[in-house]
Image (cartoon, rainbow, N blue to C red; front, side):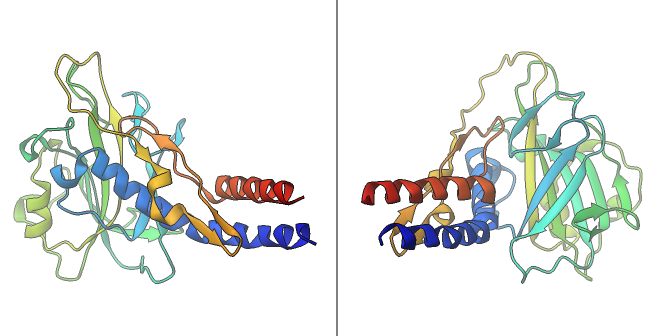
Amino acid sequence: MIVLPLIFALPVLFVTAQSNDTAVQIEAIEAHFTQAALVPELLATFDPSSILTINFDGVGDLSPGQSLTQDQVAPTPTIKITAANSSVDLTGNFTLAMVDADVVGADESNITRHWLENSVIISNGQVSNSSATDITSYAGPAPASGSGPHRYVVILYQQPASFSPPSDFSQPNLGVSKFDLNGYVKDSQLGAVVAANYFTVEVGTSTTSISATSAVESSTLASISVTTTSGSAAASSTGSASNAASIPNAGSSTLFLGMAALAVVAASM
């Protein structure tokens, strides 16, 4: 009599874990940006409404902060966008940018523009530049040897009707150069950050002292806790801000919760 209610509770746990998965990923990427010092070094605040996934041919979808080689990031990546919930509007125009935020502890004067496209759209869950203005075509990272792990940040901004880029950023085919990202956002009247992600590239062995970053403990994320009438369960994983970090998905959460529920069943028998 005790076993049956607990077995029937498993589908409830499954549904709850699935519905919370996107919220967990949003909270996790916010934590990654804080732990990697991208907030506030690059962005004063970071409150994304969607998940941005970077995909390189031969590598696949990246985890936040994943460490890659120059060869791996040479081709232009595919950028996928997943809304956090059904209320997020992904229609209209957006601006896509990728900047080299240098190593942890660097100031804004060291930011370099590697990619800038205005008027991109979201089509079938991917960023499309079919009708965009390609200000700076994607240029693969090339950090100086020994300079440490550089943080390459891909950001999608809302591009409202009032968008008006500065005259020196109104024409295509600008090369890679130093870039005042926040100044550009303000001057061109871009909207809020929709989504962002980052990866790291290091060439050679660092000869400089780099500020340490701490791992993101997903067990501390509020959204990952799933409470039921019979108790609560939480899944956890760890990652590094400078290496691939795990973000729980619905499948792993479901497996963990299912095992937890079965353990309760066994204990009750």
